[in-house]
Image 1 (cartoon, rainbow, N blue to C red):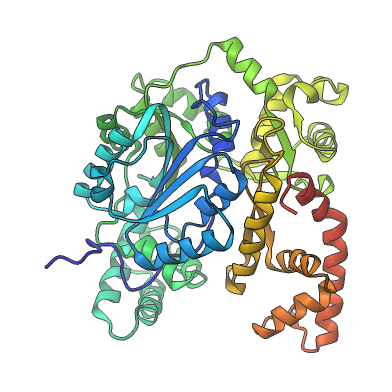
Image 2: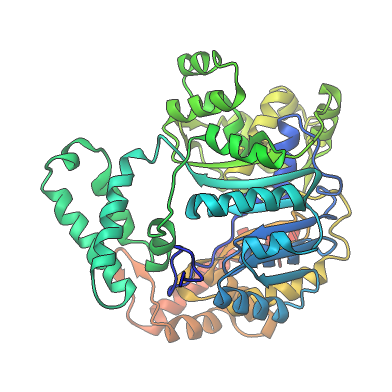
Length: 509
């Protein structure tokens, strides 16, 4: 009898995480940037959204908290995931989301609604060819004309070098005994010893020791679901595009805006070579060859219209952006696929200062002489860069957040109460952005303390110390309560000065 998991890893739950690239406001911006008309209502926060293979459902929960006028359907066939997602949604008071314990095949046969957005994070790489065919039929039936699919997947050729390492992990884990986390740790240790021999394949493959060491820092449930599924597959983009054509889908754009700028991905010579391809799927695949990309986040559309150049320009000018970082903390240099790229202070400093005043449209920003001097294309490029780095974000349409703040506030209270110390970062719903905003665990505790009228440092230390957490100073663990309390007081002062005004501006606090 076939297991209900159908080759997918069972017996260990997936990590709880929020995937920002699946946010409707970011999807809408990426589509318009590439010249596509987004689904109606996407930028206004009024749409129907489905997440397939939602895991613990944190992404759909946060988005539902940020977009009260949208409706969310999330499904996963793991009952533990769905039970936890339903509990959190109930505690958050969310009435605009539903979590379903269903397989893709069962849901395809159902009479449920059609959607403007369907999102799949990683699922395409983790399931069998038969289940991919089911997904194609699901997308064909459930996506509205003009709708968009977000899909992320492991990519070739970037993953070629790591496939032999994955085989060692799967074989060694399968042959071991004891709990799965222990077997995973044993498999990583074995791979490390094999790599240390520097023999055969290990002598020719680059980056294997560093990849093994990075795996040591990952939780076992991440490794299990990312590497140990029996049908784990990496794909050439062209093959994904040709399979999705069966659902009447066309590749539209990279979901991450900076990846739409070829000069941030490829050298000038590589750009010229990729431009020789006449087929768009082949051209994208060549870009993956020339950048050695190992993971893609793509947007595919079903019958979407192209914008005229004037429509694109006007929509981009009307798009508002909000800052997610203290303007003084914006980096001077960022890493991109072509290497380290400087962020010109004459552009990024006045841009950060302008956005620190509150959300501003591109049109408003271009009225400022210090920005207008750089030209519209460069200011737009800077906004795309900051948005891709989670330092800024496109917002929903002006006025959309009004009335949504109390909805997001209830959701955020539940998210902060539910946060676990080992997860590090949590995300709060922003009705201004229509997405989640990252906060550290100590920042979440400061916000909870304010809600409950308690002294922030003492409240945070009570929770942190109960979990065995202590801070480090100069590499030394702080052993006394007073040392840790003083560290928390300093952190709270910085939080109030730098982060709290940003969280208030976007409605996350």
